[in-house]
Length: 357
Image (tube, rainbow, N blue to C red; front, side):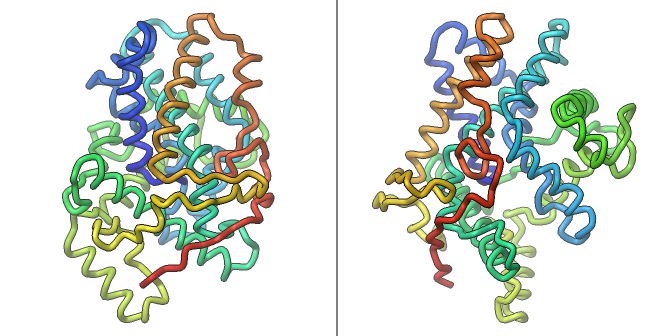
């Protein structure tokens, strides 16, 4: 996964591009800029990632949620987005429709960012899916270290902002205010319905929850609330939490490496991660493909591709773009490998940047 801030920032950059496009693209930008719908677009931009890491004190719940995270990243992405769009086509104009369209457009942005940035992130992080737990654990640690460094770097570059003052949850909090334990039901119902349509077998076997209402343990709602609680607990503004994680690292002689769970300050970022010198790197699942793009170049390309894909989606709603064409252009991509393959085990080429600490 690209980091949460990277996803939000690329969405914002995409909106800027749309504002300078044709009349249809400016219409999309106006929707996404609307204060009533912004959080829904932001949630869409991080939606496939809410299933990871956020139940770290409950391995059982983590495994159940991770199944859905992997499914969102590895299979039928174009089909899921098309099902979102088909639902929206059947809705009357109004705020509910606009919220769900904003969510869907944000989701499209997420897929563009992952397809473009993930080959680089996995290449410099290591073999995340290796069956050897020692290898995969190190790669997963590196993955977090890289993504959080990229997020912090982008904050400083774009806004001159330190992670010590950045409040993430405000951008994606669409909880019902009565008790704060439920995602907005219109998003829950919309998302769940498409999962059932696109992944009927997986839904029948693995979906935890009811189709009628949000009940305790519902995997969509639980993952979303867990995501918010995780980032509330590990708020990068908290001096106390930073200190606690450092103490844990000291006591365990950095065997746990708990400090990786917080966004690093800009001065402690390993600058090699940005690839400003444009070193060659390879697609882990297709080593014959080589690139020299820096992280910022990948971010900029993601915004351009996101703009194009959002425009195609909007045209589809207007009957100006055909389903077959969209599947041909966008179908089959794995959000982790960045190529048309469901198999993450195809990733074989890695050159992890060793932790300097």
